[in-house]
Image (cartoon, rainbow, N blue to C red; front, side, top):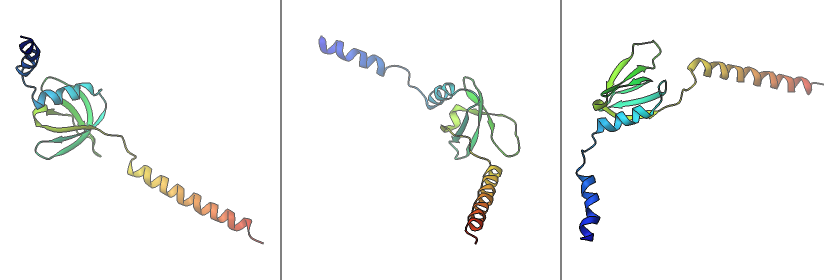
Amino acid sequence: MLLVLALSPCAARAQGAPVSGADRWHDIAARIEPATLVSVRLKDGSHTRGIILGVDSSSMTLVPKTRIPVSARDIRFDDIASIERTKQGMSPGSKVVIGAASLVGGLLLMMAVAFANYD
């Protein structure tokens, strides 16, 4: 009888409704706060980076992060292969300005050293 009682909770858990992939993606997307930048890979192999606006029972609303603004799109949880949080990176313009400023600063430093050693 002890064996039957010990195995009954396992049997009760095993008979529960199976959790589908869509339900798991819904749970993950619901835990991510709105306005978070995410990377979403779909089952068809396409990839989208964007900001989550909201989550409902069957899909999430995502604004793709592109150079040219586009409208929000709904992505069904059945179509999702993976969701990852991503960090906001520097824009290409920022990288160019930092590189140019470093170059000018280096040249000014070399000129200052050259003038200090000039006799």
